[in-house]
Image (cartoon, rainbow, N blue to C red; front, side, top):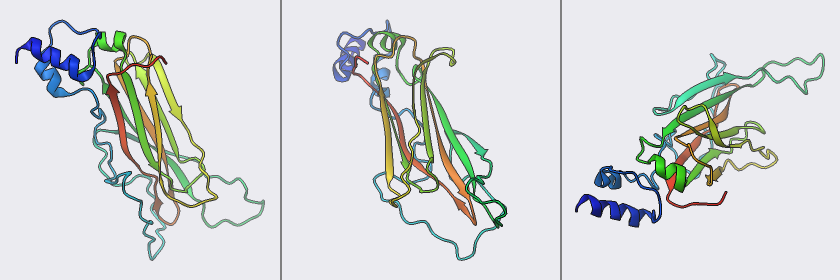
Length: 233
């Protein structure tokens, strides 16, 4: 096919009728790159588990692990930038004079990625004028470790990577009165966000704990997808 035919196929198959198109890209390469509906996050399930498979009960060690404590799993987090933040011991609720042999030590484990939308095959005219929907989805384990075990923050950034054009955050509170260990979904759709978006910064934090062993909260099937449709907000 000629370049004009590839261009017409991109417009037709992607539903971009009326969208601003760049001057002279390689439309065949653009089509084969499939920027729409493709997960732009790398390594979206580093723990090797899926939301479509029920979580098994955790294995309890025969002997308690008294240390040294650890606060991060040994899984492969390639593609992610990671950080561990140790939290101070929570001594609330302990009556004066009480003898406590051991307290749980909590930590936030952060993983983040920066998605370059232009490098993924999108173009400035499309992002600024058409403003396709940007879909965010994440799944986290209801680990029962604490009432706050998960936080998500997603930002749409400008070309300088510092200007925040739109933002979504979620900090759910867990109901510890029931036991399920199910997968829980967090999702959001960015639309009508205005011109200038060039990057998506995806960051989530999950709470881990060390008490006679390492206990973690996992995530899976994280995704950032751009869809060729528009919304009014």
